[in-house]
Length: 177
Image 1: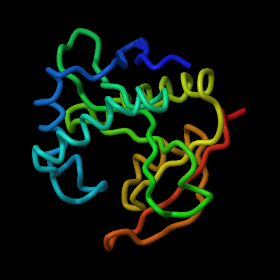
Image 2 (image 1 turned 90 degrees about the horizontal axis):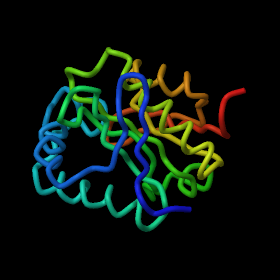
Image 3 (image 1 turned 45 degrees about the vertical axis):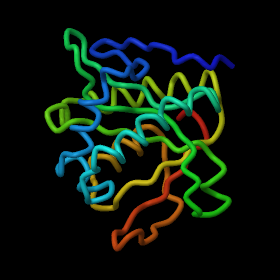
């Protein structure tokens, strides 16, 4: 498996490696209350965003998959991120050993179908190159992300409480048939 980040083009967007010049936009996205309301509930300080940004880049080098920057055709800035990572969250053997899928979009890109297009492209790549089971964790109150996950073939494992919020742990055994 290659340790370089592949570029994926779809009809409306490009999934590409995050670049150093993406960091200010990345930090802005994660500092936006509307973005994190169903993720952590708290905007990330810049130092925390920097740590996560570097972790995203390193994930590709260590395990051969990770997160891509989402960039719409004709724009210069990233509009979010999508991909896979190992979260090591301590949720159990039915969740922790598997790559976790995640997607985040800036508020202006939400509700446009870009999230589904990006997540579908990322999962198509994963199904061809890495293969196997994936998991995701979504706040029960985040109806749009739950619909997106179900469209991708995820089913519920169980609901848990995390930091006072109810979240759904979900699994996907491979591409939907």
